[in-house]
Length: 165
Ligand code: NI
Image (tube, rainbow, N blue to C red; front, top):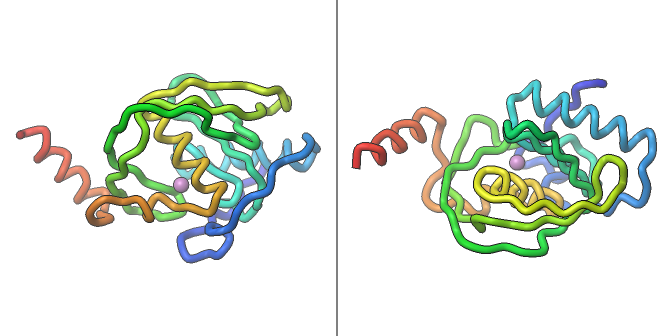
């Protein structure tokens, strides 16, 4: 396994459309391993291949629910509800912003064994899936932010103010 360099906002690779993966190869397996290692090293909950400069439809996710999700060629096939919450991105370091997304989604994808899977998700996992799938289509959460991007300190301040209301 190896750490990969995370591309940050402004890098043209982050605004490109990613290609579907046609078959599992040792290179793809290596990429997935490296993406997990890079995500954990940077304390992220999800990472998409373009964030390490690879224009393939591959996402890895670990939101702390005991699962390591690998989503290859993912498609969101159902969504419902609406939820607004803070989001961040390893490609936009140090910042957070409020984004409204579907509260529940169903995603179809291939897993690391190239088997078709469907995941019905809600809450943080649903948010993370939507954020990462957007990466595969060249979209950063900063395009969706309501209000200002803010530092983590500002976000915590705003959250504690909300808690007092
Ligand atoms: Ni991101």
